[in-house]
Structures are given as structure tokens and as C-alpha cells.
Image (tube, rainbow, N blue to C red; front, side, top):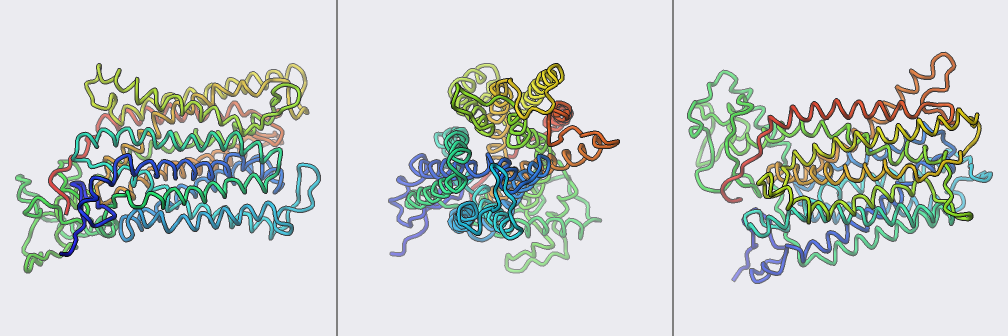
Length: 570
């Protein structure tokens, strides 16, 4: 007898076709491999990216503003390329095979990066102490490797969190609750990798060498790949539902073709498949909503629609579920947009926080200096502390008052994080005021480091970490839950683009600020010698933008209506 694929009610399929395997796949038994993969992959990514600004300054001989902009541009690209990976996953390969394909590009990029920092002829030459003068070919090889990594991560980032959530059946109440915890532990595993990266790997880079400093993350990435493939027999796979962009354009075209058609008052007259299953592979039906009524025209049946033998021309007539897919995407866009400023604040940890720390006393005892980039470990420690506290204590406590099964709604959780991020920037600004006051009082403008401990930066890192637990984990859960079933990779990628645009916004702000504040021969807010600048003004600018962004977020979130799915998958 021919064996058939075994599907859970939300559309996932066991990788093995024997029905007896259904109980042995998915759930936490599969997720342990996904979490192990993510931990090692993030160790590789942060091990290479956390201290990148110092590599650009010391080995590629770039100034503060240029190095900071190159870091944010690259980091931004790492969060734009997921749109490519997400489209491929949702339309053609599925999440498993997309991850399996792109990891090899990632490993190739990491390998080339290691070679560019260690092999004579490829690594920067003409070094004098901490400063090198690389030729154009050496610089080009470095940036080719860097952007290969950006492309490789584009196939992993949008898929891996959704792939983990796919291991839990949404129609099984017990598994549904576990899925909510999965996002917390997924982010926890990210920060375990980041903790090792910001301590051990940054120390290796600053004290042993950049060849080893990039080589260890490369090995970590190979281990991540091994973890992923080791769990293959336990995974449940989501069937790709065809091109989501095609379905979106079909609704738009059909609606505009019927601009003059009136939408009936009785919404049950709108076109939808007759049975309980959606006509979109891997998707449940979506309930009709009253917002964005113009697009309902695409589901109004008319004489011009070609319906033969049950076949419908989707460029003329779309189902209610297909229309609601487009509505869902449009509805989450305003929430998505408010994440951009938060991402700008977050990006300062790898740029302005590091540059600020470079000017401070980095000694721990007489003989040991902590690299300024290593202070991001306190952001990681904050995340590792607040993630289990949120999951085990805050949620049960909040549940008593809110009566909500998750303690806070996803939007409430994200809003709390936005407020905390604003105070992180204020804290960083206050520290810079104190630092500059010391410089002014002691006429220390030409000192590279002032006798003020770098550990005064700890509060701003702790606040950013706390904000992450609320906002970024809330975003992961929100974009997975509110995405149409067959567009989850795309919506995960969409959430990641806020990080990209946040990095690009940071680049724009730095460029504009420097252009304006350098007028009339002034050094500007962020000169190469920060003792002559006003980095505090830049932090306060970000705090102001965060406050205005939060007000907009409040207005948007109060009007948001959560998605409702019904029926079974096709």
C-alpha cells in the first residue's frame, strides 16, 4: 500500500511518510536541534559582527563615522536579504530546504572571511602597531566575504524561528502553549551564543589575533550546520503554498478590475471555497474582516469571471481567504514600521556604545583590559536573565490581572520594550555628559582614554537587553501568529527588515548629523576624537525619536484587530 504524508491540522507534514512516526516528530524533541543550531549560528554571527567596528578601524584604517556606517550598512543588509530567503521558502522550497541550501553560502563566506584575516597576501598589509594600510584587493576580498555572509544569513533568519514554531500544532492546545514558550527559549539560545561571542571571541580577536578571532566563529557555524541536519528525522515540514507575491497581486488586480462593482452587505455572498479547506496549500481559511473593504471587490462574483468545471481565474476572482491574506499584510505594516526606531537604538551597541567605551578606562585589575565590544555581554546577560523571568514569573503574575493566557498581549509586550529602550538612550546620554564634563574639567581633550571606568556603561547595556526581551521576542511571536499560514516566512522576514532599516536609519542620522554639525569648522557631534564632540546629543536625539515613535505605536496598537483563522488546511 502506498504511504501518504502525515499532516497536523495546521498544515505541517512529518518528514517521514510512515503514520507511525507522527508521534515521534515535532514538539520539543525536534526543537532541541533547532535551538542548538541557532545558538551556534548566532555565536558565529555575533563573534564576527560584535567587534567588527574595531577591525574596520585598526585593520582597514577607517575613521569612526566611516567604520560605524559600514557596520550598520552590512548589518542592515543582513536583515534585508531574508526577504529573498523567505520568498523562496514560502513559494518553492519550504523552510527546511531553504535553510539547508543557504547554510553552505554562509559557511563559504565565513571561510573566506577567515582567510582574508589570516593568509598573507589576503590579510591587510603594511601594519604599524594597531594600524594597517590594506590595498584595494585586500579590502575587496574582505567585503565580498562579509556580504556572502549577509546573503547566507538571508536564507536562515526568516525561516529558523518559524520552522521551530512549525513543530507545534496550533490546533492542539497543549502544543499551542509550548509554542509560546518556544519563542522565549529561541531568543534565549540566541543570547547564549552572543554571550560567548562577546566575551571569549572578542578577547581572542583583541589579544590573540583576527585570524583565530574569525576562525573560531567559522567552526561554530560548521557545528550549527551539523546540529540542523542531525535533527532531520524529527522535523515536521510545512508545505510551500506557492508564490505569496503572486496571490497578493492577484487580489490587487482583481479588485481594480471590479472598481465599479458594489460589495454586497451580506458578506457570506463573497466567493470562498465550499468545503472547510482553504484553496491555498498549507493555509487555513481566514474569517472576513470589515477593514480595507475595497479589496473585498476581488471576492465579488460577476458574469465576467471565468468559472469552468470548478476552476476560477484568480486574476479576476479571489477567495475571501486570499483577500484576507493581503489585508493581514497591510494591517501589520504600521506595527512593523514602529520597530524601525527601536532597531536604530539597538544598533548603537555595535557602534556608538563601542566607540564611547574606547575612550574609557578598560582595565580590570592591573594587567587585564576588557575590550569595549565585550561589554555587550551585559546586554546578553540581561536577556538571559529576563527571558526565563518573563516566562516563569512575569507571565503568571500578569495573567492574574489581565486574564490573558500569555500575561500580556503581543502588542502590550512590544510597547513595554519601546519604553525601556527610550530610557536606555537617556542613560547613555547622561553617561556621556559626565564623561565630557571630566574631559572639560581636566582639559583632557587629547587623552585617548580618561580614568573613568568603562563599567559605567553597564546600565545602558542592561536596559537594551531588557527591552529586547519585551520587543524583539514579542515581534517574533506577533509576526508568526498574525501572518497568514502560507506567508509565515515572508512575515518573519518582514519583521527582520525593521532591523535592516533601523541600521540604515542610524547610518542616515550619523551622516546628516555630521554634515550639519561640522559647519563653520566645528568638529561635529561624532568626530574621530570623541572628547571634542557631543555624542550625548546624538543619544538624546535617539531618545526623542523613541518617545515620538512610542506615541505613534500607542495610536496604532489601539486600533489593531488580531487575525482569526478557521477551518482546516488544504
